[in-house]
Image (tube, rainbow, N blue to C red; front, top):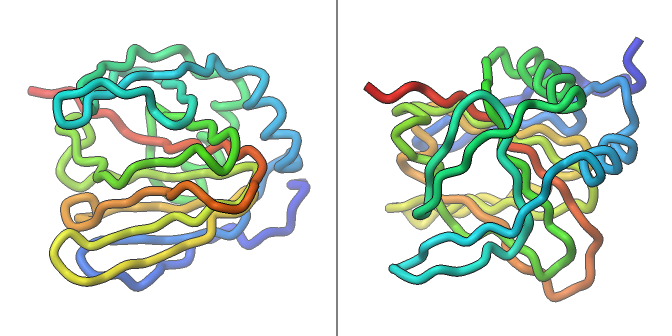
Amino acid sequence: MDLFSAHSTLLPIPIEDGELAFLEQLALPYAPQQVFARLQAETDWRAEQITVYGKRHFQPRLSAWYGEASYSYSGMTLQPLPFTPLQLELKAAVELASGRRFNSVLLNYYRDERDSMGFHSDDEAELGPRPAIASLSFGEPRTFILKHKRLARTLKIDLGEGSLLLMAGTLQQHWRHGINKQSQPCGPRINLTFRLIEPLA
């Protein structure tokens, strides 16, 4: 029996030009704190450099890429490490809750309030025209912000311990998303974004 009696169904969030659904806590056989500690210890964290407006910068967080396919964005190509046993368990739980299939995961480690994610869309060709991306969070809650590319629309969602957010449909075509730095101190957070990488013709 699962440790949690959390609701197991993703609930739709009304949004223009895309699909969004949220689950406050994904049912898992481990406490979220256990998952965080194992991810922190078992992941091959790296400080990656990306290209922004022609200049190379270190990302303001640590990251890692695991799965079955390589992935290119912001001027770099990530070669996958094989899924760990814990990642496979998390992937299976995310696939069960979302009804989607995934073959890769990007992990981001936000060490404190100074780490962040710049606003962007996950619209790389290998994700397909209507990608489904499942975002699973552990550790300190952070505010996930979506901004419409054309309309004056902003949506904020607090991603807490064990929460699952599914972005799908045409969302990446019309919205950018990110996580700002914070002025108040906060503890570390680990986020996993499960993706399906499609072979390019």
